[in-house]
Image (cartoon, rainbow, N blue to C red; front, side, top):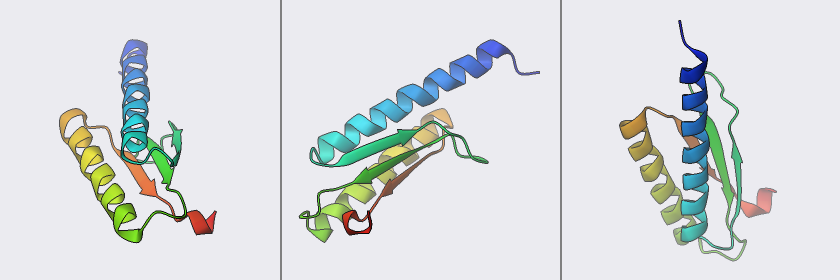
Length: 93
């Protein structure tokens, strides 16, 4: 049986990880809008959505997307937390 402290510990780990990913995204793209969600869905532990500035070149958006995917993969390898990161098209918002 999963104890309350195990659940609280995992929730704290998810919150810390989401904050770290959001700060990482802002470091890579200070002008981006970053939204995080701790809502779990199936095997996902949370979500980070990043909307870069509309004037950002597509090559920079691609680099941002790859950097966030790599960081999320490292986190999964080290912690088992599956955080979905999405770089969204600013024109679609």
